[in-house]
Image (spheres, rainbow over the protein chains, first blue to last red):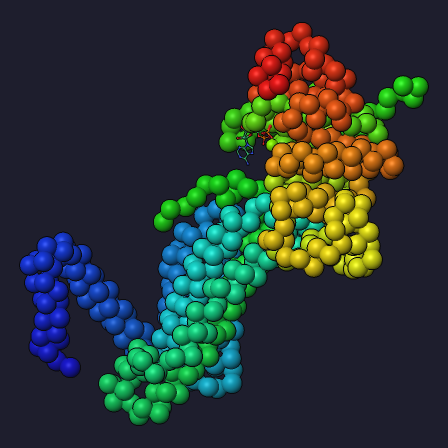
Length: 257
Length: 242
Ligand SMILES: Nc1ncnc2c1ncn2[C@@H]1O[C@H](COP(=O)(O)OP(=O)(O)O)[C@@H](O)[C@H]1O
Ligand SMILES: [Mg+2]
């Protein structure tokens, strides 16, 4: 694609701008900000990737992955402010995800250990892990808030913190993983997954594109399940003290972002 | 009263602070072994807080709680909570059947509750045995309270804490529960601490009474104090409620 044709795709930005203006939707400013940001951010990433690919240095690959983990952690931790040390728990989870998935992919020689493969696949899997962590923390907090009485009840009868929070933990894990599984059941029937579409447009053989898409989908199943389980089991002990008391003030300060 | 009174729970200058506001202020007082002590006072007085402390669900910000001569912190949380059982306000029930709820204290110890024992427990709290496998959503308020009490009794506590267990019940169920608690108290010599907003009940079932207001223990003594207190605040409270 030439830069001229890319410039012509700005027609797709112009249409919503005109519509927003005539119908007084008030979306012009945000549309323009979104356009400018995506252009700058994606070209920046594109040039960084080009640099990393050209350098053929493993050091830069690791640096890129660490950067992705940092950004994803900072994003996800906003949802778990009430959990002590949530930043490190999320970072640890993402590192485990990266090691497990790349370990399998590279270890079994499913992909070659080059930047071209490691970085985009890490990006997709870590991005999903971040979304799942946010989803899980939302659900877990909501489950706990709705069941404070039951948690206290179990403690009052001599149950341990793990027994007291077990149902809320399992429910939150389950409900945060289900959308990933459900979306895979209908995949390809309604819309083609983004990565596969990109590859096909880029000229790849559709069956080859399907193979890589499946690799990602299977990887997503692991990241979804593993992220919420890891975050869950790392987080719940901070809600109790050593006298097996439920520290409700950790939850009473609601986060609104 | 030939037997000397024996203190089973002692509060010593207990304070409790939450979000930098005082919920309990310098509470010092006793609960006697084998006796029924009722706790009365307006809502928000700190009554539930006192019970939760006895069961170890919360700890004082400062001050001590002594149980049978030992500081409460020397008990393991689990054994304390089995020894000092609590029937919580609003009788929270876990999802499932009556059996699931009765079995909960055993389940938590990886033990099984036999159907026979479950049925005899239902009889103890005068519940019909054919509700054993009923979903708890379909129980009346009185039935829920009885299930909650029966569940607490499963751990065979020597001290039983009751938080407004009859406040949502009709007079018949209330009377049944009062008789039930009195018989548990006499038969097994279980110490009872009973929060109630019903002053008639507080006098009827109580040997001793704590009157709490605004986080303080205003007066404590034999339950007749409710009729003879010289404290103006207590007189007003009793008149307002009676
Ligand atoms: N978890 C909590 N967080 C903040 N305040 C609380 C909490 N629990 C109780 N309180 C406050 O402490 C006071 C005493 O509560 P409580 O012991 O439940 O009173 P009572 O049982 O006599 O109605 C009340 O003002 C209540 O609002
Ligand atoms: Mg109360």
